[in-house]
Length: 114
Ligand code: SF4
Image 1 (cartoon, rainbow, N blue to C red):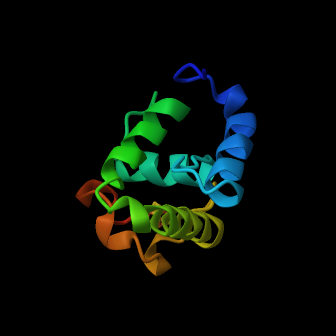
Image 2: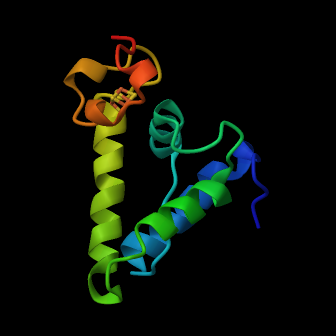
């Protein structure tokens, strides 16, 4: 069990979750640094949210799909977060003006750093 806020255990948890989701075909949403950064910048989670908090948030929000299509949906959703995180929501100098998630930025952040 990973305690909320214990960020040092995220890589191991991420690997295990990724194996469950992609290789094992289990409904276990993967949280990674991209997900955390995007969610924090958009105000979709509290600053102190830990791995379990973010995973629960995603699994509840994305759990409405019927079980038959949920696995593909979660895999695709996670893959898109990785693409956004890798190409736009970089740790330094995020490219908000070019990012497909820009319309979802909080109003006070809509002119975010470039
Ligand atoms: S709009 Fe900006 S903060 Fe939001 S995901 Fe894109 S790069 Fe990150």
